[in-house]
Structure formats: structure tokens, C-alpha cells
Length: 389
Ligand code: NI
View (cartoon, helix red, strand yellow):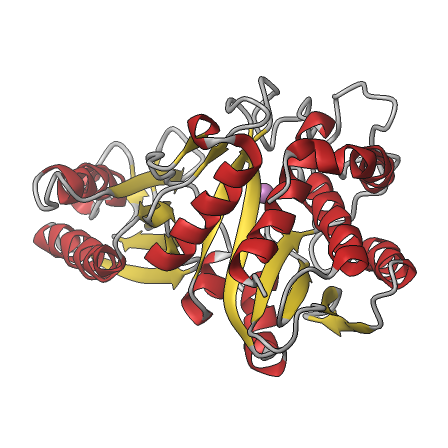
């Protein structure tokens, strides 16, 4: 296994790639110049099995090891940027106004390219590595990860295990964090329209006031977590949108409520869908109103498998030592579409320290180039651990 010093030369090159990608960010499913850049780099490393155009702009490239037959493992990086006006003031700031790499996917892409260059030149492993460059991690369903799985990459490239990595501001550079089981939450969204009977605000007794009913529904939803969910389980129900009439003297016909549901336990998604409807409907009917209800299932929880987690921990430890790998991080309630790949195949998702930078999705955020050799080294050691000849 290699220490991080092995990857210092690659750091210089990967920093140049990362800055190029940062200057030229692209939104979901529009990563055309990014995909072209990635494809050209992969070809220049002597990789000749490259499939492009998967889920619009996604790429899978295969590197065969020099150690004989063996399984194929998938390593995934995301490539998309966000609709944010950059305020990092870095010399490599976005040249595309209103679009920026605010989640570090430029760094993720550069690190997988660095690993590709190392693995294609050394090939000290059996079997094969499938490099997965995915578009559109950020948007609403259906995301790039979902679509790549739908388009059959796991079967077509005979991928048996799959691994993902994300930078984490607030964790020191050179440190890793992971946990067995769920590491990121699921994301579902809901809409409730309360249908009452509008009228003059001076005569509420002649109306069925959906504003008051909506207020009761919002409070009712709070008890689904506090009174109905086992406190040792994790469930978040947040109401985030509310719209009613626009006048002082009008009681509207209709009030719209929307919100999001996050959980680490898939059974609680069914509970939330069923009970939000029952609670809202029960309250509305009690006041002589009715509701329209829509529940949108988006990303599932990102679930780390035990064997994949152990392998990821082993690879990270071999790079930075046991003291720099937190193997029991508390899961985040944020969502990550790598979850779809972990539904399709076993594996694990790990966090890589990005140091004391701004949080992701902040206009002043920037991926930390000091983290590049750690990410590259993790991928390299992971492959040489799992596919040891
Ligand atoms: Ni991200």
C-alpha cells in the first residue's frame, strides 16, 4: 500500500485539471465540455475502453489490471456544478456567470482522473476497474446516478462493488470519515393543498377558512416525529413553503403547503407518506374542508454495506494511518444520489477532509487542492486492496 507521498507528483497535475474544471462549470446533464475534457485525459493515459453519452453526459472507462482475471469494481465521481454566483475570489473562479462548482465535484472529477492515470500506468491489480464519471448529482429526481443505473452500467460493465467519495468541509485535510449502514439520508418532498371555501375576511363564519386549517395541519405534522416515531430512529419533516391569499380582507379558497422528509430508515418513508396524508386529511375533514396530496419519492438513503465499509476503512488507513480515519461518523440527513448505485451493488461512500473551508453550496466555497493526493491515494489503495493479485 502506498503512502500519500506517492501521489504528490499527481497532485500538481490534478490541481491544473481541477482549476480548469472550476473555471468551466456546467449544470446538470449539460456537462459536455467536462465530459470531453475527461474523455481526452483518459485516452491520453492509454485507456482505450471508454463509453460516453451514458445518461446524456456520463462516462464509464475500464482499466484492466495486470494481475489476471478478477472482478470489476466501480469508482464514482460526480461532475456537475450548481446555479450559484461565485464569490470565492480565487484566480480560477468560474468564467460562467451564475454557475459554479460549489460542491467540489471539480475536485472529485480531478481525483478520479488522477487515480485513473496512476492505475493505468501501474496496473498492479487483478480484474478491472470501472471509472464512473456521473452527470447531474444535484438536481431533483431523476438524477444522473439514477439514470446511469437505469441505463444498465452495473450489468454492462459487470461491476460487482461500487465506491463513492465526497469532500467534507470541517474535517481536516488528510482525514477520512465513514460509518457502516446509512451515512446519508433519503429525500422525499410533499405538497398539500387545503381546499376550503373563501370569502370576506370580515365574515369568517360564512367560509371554511383554509388558513386556520393549514396552521393546524402544520402543527399536526410536528407530532408525527415527536409523538409517533421511535426517538432512536431518525426522521425529519420540515414544512418549507406556504402560500395563501394576497390581501388583508380575503379568506382564500385554497392554501398550499409544501415540505421535505428526510430519514435514514427506509420504512419511515412509507410511514411519512401514509401518516402525513392521514393527519392532514383528518384535520381538514374535521373542519369541513378537504385536501389534495402529492408525495414525491426522490433519493433513497445512502446505505454503506459492511464489507465495503471495512474495505474502504482498510484502504484509507493504509494511506493515512488509523488515527486519521474516523470509522464511526454520525450520518448526515443530507441526501446523495450515489445511494442509487449502492442500491444496485454493495460498496461504500466515504468523506474526505476538505479542511476549514466554507460549507458546500456556499458562494465562497472552493475545493481544497491539498486534499487531491489523499483522494487519489484512497482510490489507488482501494483498488490495490480489493483487487490484490
Ligand atoms: Ni456534492
